[in-house]
Image (cartoon, rainbow, N blue to C red; front, side, top):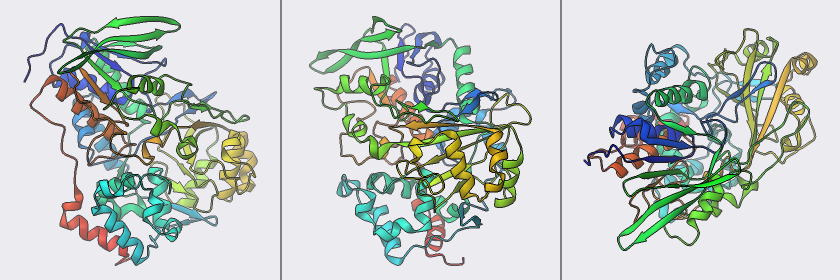
Length: 529
């Protein structure tokens, strides 16, 4: 183990979960002084894609929330050191205690023809099951850039297994077969309870309030510096025979461009890309606009530093297919209890217990989730919040004959009310709610087909002081679009840069557990159903 240099500085580019957790690992496991760590964030808030904002009057907003489960070993390792905001226990203990109280057990994972489908059957053919089993063992190199639709028959995409799988994880048929394979393997232990969402865990509040805020507080108490409204536009490198180092960081602080000098002993950790870059918000009476990669600095920075360099990945693989990576989410704030009460009666689940409700007949393939209330710290009594999204945003709705992407919040709620067959209550619900849509052009870009080298390693070859973290670096076995992936990348980066003789916890591999395999086999074949 290298002895930490008290004068060495660490610069973390991006204020999302990967950077925040890298700062924790630097301090907790590397004995780095918090005062030597600086986080550079282009927006006015930290948290990145784990965001939540707004108020009861104007409406709350969450662009999304990541699923968590008990085998997220890096996540729980990290948060076992972070006190919850009330300081009575750690965040890890808070999450496990909460999920003992509020276990996810959906009685309406699918909602069809105005009625709940209790514990839907998978509906897989024997050939579908054989293809799934083949994918689970086929080497990634052989799958290459193939799509999920290249590996499975058209009928598979009409099954309820696919309806539940794709909406839980946000997969599309044209996404990477390699990523789909990784998910099949990573979550083998959850397949047997998939039709009731058994095993999926939630935080007490939204993930910004329950995870980001405690992290921020812990880091601030230790002197970590946060430079907000600061866009990193370039990294200047010095090349030597035995590798390269970052020598300067070019930043734009609200129109003022300057350089930060990086010394030989300093470290630079960069969050590559952003799944929520270019997001835009609509309102109850206006749709959200579709923006692009120029509406933010994350993709531009990656393109600039990767140009002409090997080992830095290929950002264009993830930015050049917006039609295949975009979707729309919406957050609805209600000032009337009737909607939540009606959903409770229709589904048989109380808010927070049922998880995601998908409408498989929806041409948008829309889903909603009603969390336990309050979902925001400080949310007033009498106010309720829920979230939803749609995967096929360019298709006309079933009740509102417009593409989801062109719909206002009022029109999106009208469509959801239609699928629930609650039209007789429509005026009351619409009169008491604020629905805010959000279009995200790159939200599933990490699922796009890719080849070896499109995602760089956490420590690029030849690097002496640079590491990459986040959803667009390469980690074996684990799956993107998860908090766990970002935290694992941060842990890997810190241990490598500091030369620590330790590694991130090994990815849980339930596919080697005979009991798990038996339960999965029985579930896929619907034996005992």
